[in-house]
Image (cartoon, rainbow, N blue to C red; front, side):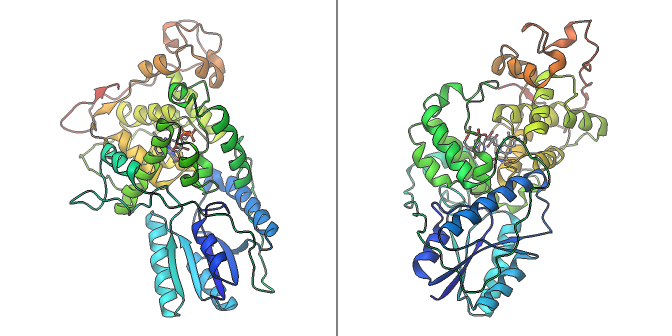
Length: 435
Ligand code: FAD
């Protein structure tokens, strides 16, 4: 093969990149291409993405290549470039959202018309989303059987990073997007992702199972934004983290939601299992939730952490999502949209899969499950350290009152809890409290 374009999307790395590795091994010239699509609003993670692209360009330049950047419709720009450089192949990492599946279909059609080889490669998940099928179904609907099948599925070997990337002569690389606004304490990119991964595996993997639910402890990896943009390979991370089954199981959850989304690409806007919910349309309650002034300290701490850092602990996400959907009876789509705007790791499959799981419209086998915020707070933030960190108005309260400030009469600077609507969200079962 003379020239291959590798269209990069959320696989922004050189380590274990099957499409890039295959292109470099089989082609004389390789064009790593990223198309900035103005139709997509990357919200807060735009800055993280800009840093990840800058880092990838440096890595490719060190190998003699470059990251070629174009702006516009990804399919049209890829085909324009293919024509300009006389490419014989366009290769991409397969992805699962409706947007990505459509892009792959259009690319396949356009390439077929021009007799260009189009291929998709693995790389976005540990196990490819179409690799496992239950008997009689096109995807797994329940996690536990998926986990059993996933755990014994043979894995592809990790692809070595290419030593050399050779671009066609005279190709204008194009300008990178710039990070317009600060986006939180994490810095985007493969170099930083790998540094964090190594540190975390060395110091925290061993204690993960015991410490992972401690809200104040900050002991989980915080690698999710790097995994989302593919700055890290999930396959490599699963292999390096294999000593902790609990940790590997989280990566399996990520794969699980990807294979659900591949089979049900409407996950972002349509109920996976519709239950006739009647959602509560209360704009004031939604604003209070978004701004962290619901009067429930654990919810407010989490929502303020989200606003400050663009990241949240899984337990905190469960608590605020359950509070919004099962206590305030607000439509999960409103919560998922806010998360998508704020999270650095915001990912259609994982975000909406989890929101639907919590709301009871998704893959939970107990859809009426609900997390009582007070009991969750006492269990996962027993000393109130997490609340004190993000809700300074409450920092002076003792541990006996920190999660129930309404029991003190002297508090003026913090709101009373929002009144909860009495109407159940749907005719039928009432939510079962706590798990
Ligand atoms: P760790 O505990 O270190 O786990 C390692 C990795 O496993 C994570 O980086 C992540 O890729 C994956 N993982 C962990 N928990 C889950 C889970 N429950 N489901 C799927 N994958 C998981 N995660 C996202 O990456 N993007 C999202 O948009 C997102 N939205 C969520 C929305 C809600 C309502 C909930 C309840 C969870 C959501 N999660 C999302 C899953 C989870 O909360 C985060 O992945 C995790 O908190 C990231 O922190 P970490 O990297 O320290 O995780």
